[in-house]
Length: 125
Image 1: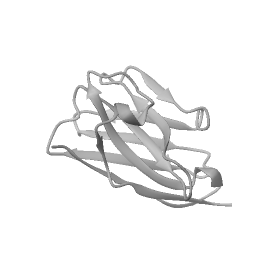
Image 2: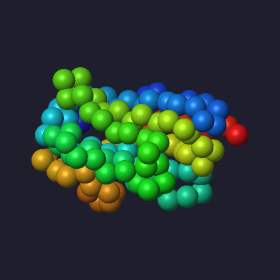
Image 3: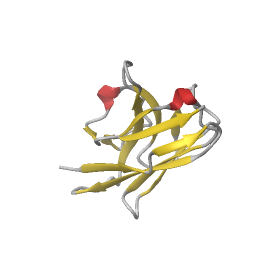
Image 4: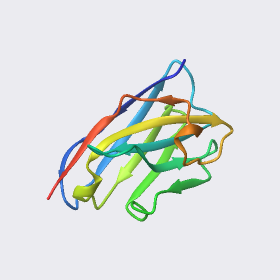
């Protein structure tokens, strides 16, 4: 069973940047699609970005397009979310998720089988 641990969250001012990391243990992430989701207080969890098993394709939510970038380093068994130009509406708990074997950059929560515990991102105005 894979364990996903997110890190890199914190408090940042509007316009600032953060890089989230998702490290896996127990199983390799090699050949699996991966994704990031977020959940703000009182709201449902929503898709942020995903990357295919090969790293060659990505999918990004319209709300973060041009500001957030997802990437993966299979040698380190880690997936990243680079967040630039942060806005107060980006405040949420960010979750890393493991998708399907040889999977595409999916967007639906049901396409992901393992989840991390989340890391808090707070953007002050």
